[in-house]
Amino acid sequence: MIKIAPSILSADFANLERDIRRVSSADWLHVDVMDGHFVPNITIGVPVVKSIRKCTDFFLDVHLMIEKPARYVEAFAKAGADLLSVHLEADGPAGIAEALRAMDDCGIKKAVALRPITAPRAILPYLEQLDMVLVMTVEPGFGGQAFMDSQLDTIAQVRSLIDRVNPSCRLEVDGGINAKTAPRVIQAGADTLVAGSAVYGAADPSVVISALRG
Ligand code: DX5
Ligand code: ZN
Image (tube, protein in one colour):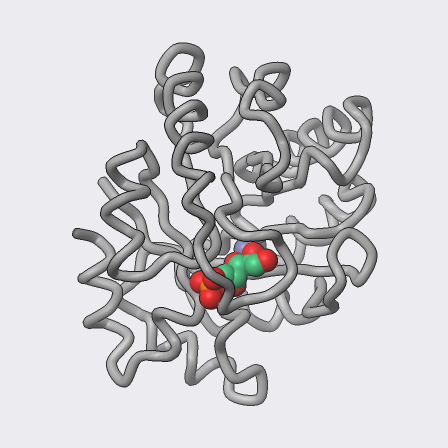
């Protein structure tokens, strides 16, 4: 089953509750956390996730674009995240292992994320224990960028590693997903689609959400 996760990065932060309601036909809510170091943008942090948790039952898919993410796993879990994605480029192997252990201790779902430059095989040391792999289809940092066609091959390679090692692991794609690119990423093996500008730029987000499902 394909899951659609609207990214609130394209929502109006002054009307966040309203904009979360606007995507109620979706499956998950994608929350982009950026620290101004790992990526050249600053967005939201723990207090906002806590407030979102109070106003929705959505599964909160929290994408951490922050350096040394292990430091913040417990805080985001306590704030109400259901799943955390940590970037493989955001720390060394020991730090990534520590972040995943902290997610286990907090009882939340675990994912690793890959920048476009990162080779699919980088997921192998962790894959057996993961609930999801997030493949970026743009450079992380901003919404509204163009989909990178070159990532279709990465998606296909990650799909074959998942099928071989841990078939129940989900494969999420994030960046430039719209009604045109969605069928291509699904064809390449994605089962979870993040979309920000395509969903929030639409007059009726629910029409786009059902179109993305294919
Ligand atoms: C980018 C974020 C994405 C972003 C996607 O770094 O991780 O989740 O919101 O936005 P669109 O769908 O507009 O590319
Ligand atoms: Zn994201």
